[in-house]
Length: 205
Image (cartoon, rainbow, N blue to C red; front, side, top):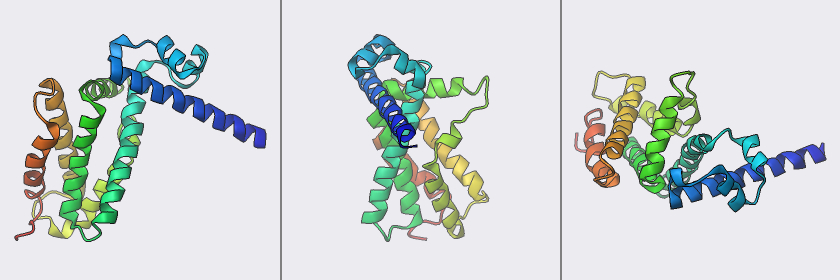
């Protein structure tokens, strides 16, 4: 039993090493300029080890946006709640959505564009597991539900969640299509409060 556990831990460590190395090289050199062989060489693993865990570089990009984004969102959202325990649900929702845009800026233009394209590509053969892998979105949905008494719109909590997430994804797509010609974070700081207070009464109501 102990030997099996150690084997699993070693496999997990190898996968993490491949993942972190691949993401670093792609960010540094560009997706098309990095090969699986180079990833394995930099990670110090055999090429066969790569294919034990991933089918292709595309798998790494998809995992990057899910794994990296989940860790990023959880880290900063938790820190916000700890330092702002009295924040209103409006403020929590605004911060959460701005955080999604900050992650896009952190991940970078190329990784964001690639993640969009590759995740959309999985929808065609289906079924897409994209939404189920965005576990961190439950925090946004929870805040929306708890803020339902302040909802001045005709939309249900489910519809508000879809509306907010669609707006964020739409801004990310526009940022990608514009070749990152504007600051996605600064644009979000202007748009998100307008979006949120079209649904909720707001602090001055």
